[in-house]
Amino acid sequence: MREYEQMIEDFDYTEQQMIIFAHMSPEDFENTDYPRLVEIMNARPRNKRPKTLWDFAEDLDKERR
Image: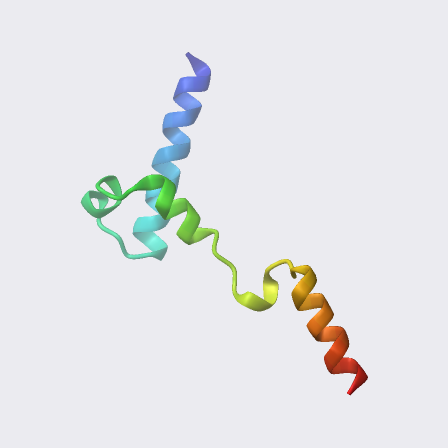
């Protein structure tokens, strides 16, 4: 039972943070596609994403010029 209570409080805390920092209403949050919301909140700008091999090769090419 304790794990279930922890999970519920984790979800409530996430909702609290979205209400405070993302200015969402409780209804908006509860009606949101949660997995998609997590993807959105974890998105990083391009300069903070891991580079592909092609990006790395392009950077090396730029350094040689």
